[in-house]
Image (cartoon, rainbow, N blue to C red; front, side):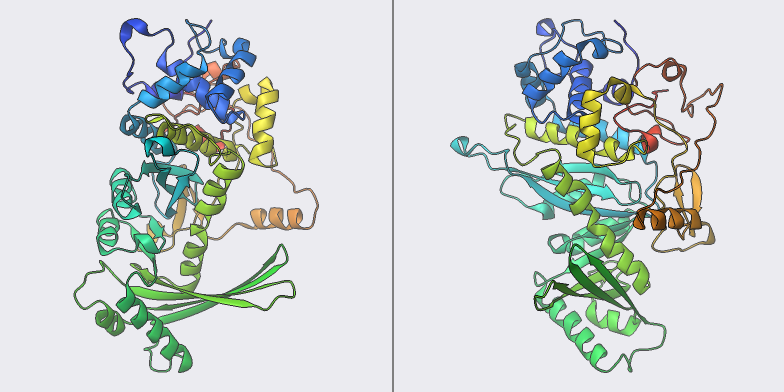
Length: 481
């Protein structure tokens, strides 16, 4: 029986326990640790958590005391239903801030998702709707809030923005979040925005649409030089051929006409994306989408920002539905659905960071469930993190993307490009050897804690000089210093 400090202990220790003291048989941190490990290994409900814990009882006792044994599924359900979701969210945010101390240069996509199974029609309880923020560079969920009943994302997005540190980031939101108050709040946080403009603002949408129609017809002949930009991208995959054209207009006179009262904070550009798609032999389709920008971006930078927004759909919402079966989950009592969503986001943050294994998240979950060694292996250091160049560079020192206190050039280096080409050609890419393991590392930045060197299990650790979560997987394993 061991009680080894973990990052769950460090960041979730302040979480108030809602249970009556004299009736508690199981430690709250033990319940949360088992829940996270179980979800990582494939559990999608409370019964699955118990099945995991009973199967891995001997492994769990190598780092958890478990004074009351394995909790039953009713205990998991009651605890998750009673936990204060706001306090649980605060612990999650503290954990994420240790992993991502800065979002400078990153695109932060904000979007909502409905947990379709979290309804109770007999009690008049609607399905839960969550709004999440996702950092495209670090590929981590930064936070989430629940939309109040009889409300929508317009009220939830400001609540989410209040708890996030977005200085230096570019925030992308779909049309429902295209509101003057939300734009002002983003700017007040020191961030830029790319907001999708649709007919929920009919007058402004018509004026922007008419402007681009006129300027494209006249080949931008009347637009002052240097105040517009264009780029084109062509993609072919899964039998689809897609051509994306991007225009950005930064004419100060035009922007003053479109925003005479300054209602849209720091409006510095408007933009258009035209997507032409052809699938097989079917006739091509064409869509046009308009955007408001707070930064005078180039067309290429704008294209990268808009494209990054889809990451929250492909790498968060789709994975939650398909890999974690979120929509099929019927957890709904009390606050259980909200708190369970936070556990899923923790697991979703950890799993993709593992670079020691290739394959899907489903494969990694299956491997973790079957292989205690894989589940217990310390994170492999030396894996290059994702490079995320900033969209706008105001100062010379901002012309590089910073990840884990390491500065990378804004262009993808030749080695990574060669690696991708080898993968595309079907050949095995060369991986650079991992650096030698340090013999003695001390202090808050120690990525190899003695407990890890001795083979102990530590959950997703804190390293202010380079968070271990960057290189961790279900190894869940970095140290809590």
